[in-house]
Length: 297
Image (cartoon, rainbow, N blue to C red):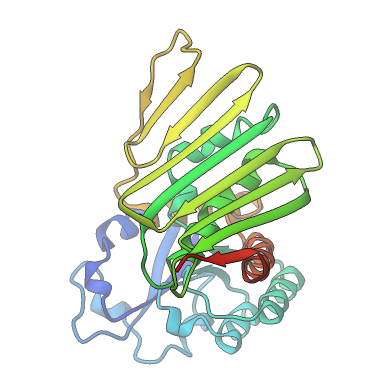
């Protein structure tokens, strides 16, 4: 049984606390909450007035409030033996990320980053394709919003890297922009060392969202439609298309998976090391965007 504590943001009343409280293998020992209201799902006796005490009383520290995802605070928690489940809104340098990984490795603790997309029901089916993948094609369109590029890049690159399951051999980036702060059309072409090829197309000029991944392998195409939660095959096999149900509480699912991995001493589903690899790849892509982009006036 792991003793757990959680640091919550001010809007925490929107989180499904009842489902978190039901996670097996966890005993809740502490809560720090920066909001004005106390959620009724937790015992008031668990609430601490100071976040500095929290890492001293738990084995698993869940930091949902990105304001506490700082290098100093997380290092303090790791040195006190805490496994960390962190918000996906990390504002850390690459060097700070590496320092946290080294601290965790030295102390025998694990770090997992929240990522709802990687816990979509399709992800396990996508990973099962990686021993026979030949061509991967991902397309996503979305309305242009500030910082949306980072989110879409990270999620799609993670998915492609897991499907290919091979180091990158070559990377090409092509993009075009109507004068704006981010490219409106971005095309990424990746050659992998195992011979697989992937293309990723992101469009920020569409009003309606669409997100499709197609994996071509051994004469069959498997298509995952994330908006409609539907899987289809071509040629159509004996089994018909599958409609998948998304998890009602992705945070509970991810923490449950993390607790299982800690207990069984397995690597986290999305570790800080995984996040660094994708972060560095995104930086390379952004550098190429500056070189390869053209503007439509």
